[in-house]
Length: 196
Length: 196
DNA sequence: ACCGGCTGTATGCGATAGCGTACAAACGTA
DNA sequence: TACGTTTGTACGCTATCGCATACAGCCGGT
Image 1: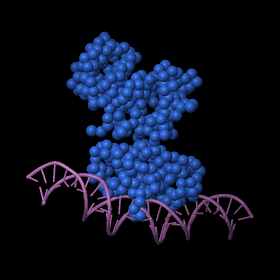
Image 2: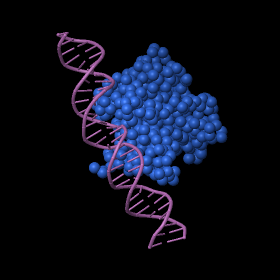
Image 3: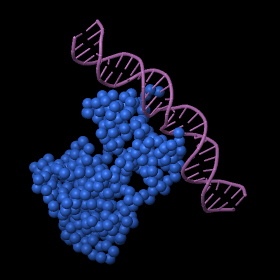
């Protein structure tokens, strides 16, 4: 079987591009990295999957860390949610609270950024909302427009536009809009500990 | 010879720690990753250097990208604190970039919310600013006003008001304001995992 | 005791990663 | 037309990666 192996990730073309960018021949890179030129050729063409030891040496020859070399091929670590694509996720006409999550559900994502619009008199923490957050998680909220009231653990805090509040998200809490205009809230919930 | 191989990087103990943290047995991880349990054991003990294909499968079984898995072993050298520049209200007239941190430095705080104003032509992370955060950290940025360009790891992403971008914050990156008006950016940096 | 189920590890064998060598093609230079 | 030199790749061979299997140790339940 002389076919190209199933690309775990197409690191080969990347190495080739980097090598070309540095104007190195296979033998040049071989000398710098301590990896034989035929091996480099095979890796570049995706015919073999190098061991970490070899891959690290190749990266070193390119003056990169291995993680940096690999990261180039792991596209998708930049996720953009366009304004036009943003959809109000959970809109609740009954409570006047609509929320949309701005951060994508990537693996390893620990913080969630969400935008909330509260109609006059609206209250968060209604039926559709998660009642509380994971133990140890922390929440920050920035008031962008209007005025809101944070009720947390029996205490009442009035917030105006521009105010930013940070609190333990595993306490029972909810936001209210006591004003007569819409209030806009940006919330960040950061998980406390990993895994379940 | 049954000795441990020359560690390219001690990825083995890290895999073991991550596996323990997820309370997985070798066979559990074997099933999740598609890598045999004996192989996992050998890799963990540093007796063999896995190929990239195998290493990537192991990383996937740990719900990590390979670069993330490797970064944990390569990291530890970057402890960037730009507190001096990020003091509330601090601005940099030279670059036209002013930033303020909205979250207090509480113990246990993992996410930092900051607000940035970029004058026309301004560039963040410019002069003597190590443009990377702690290894494993994740950043989300929401464009509130104006237009900005995110340059990350050689790639260019144009963002308009309302767009939200999420990326690995330990990549070299910076924001630019190519427009003729001020741009306002809300950024959330969430520290990476690992505290054990 | 004895058991079934779990843990991680030793063993043996294909498959292949990785090396040295040798080769064909493309460049100049004469 | 040679002739060096450089390019990337094909060829064998050995080391070892990676698998299925089997094994020893550790628990908790009859």
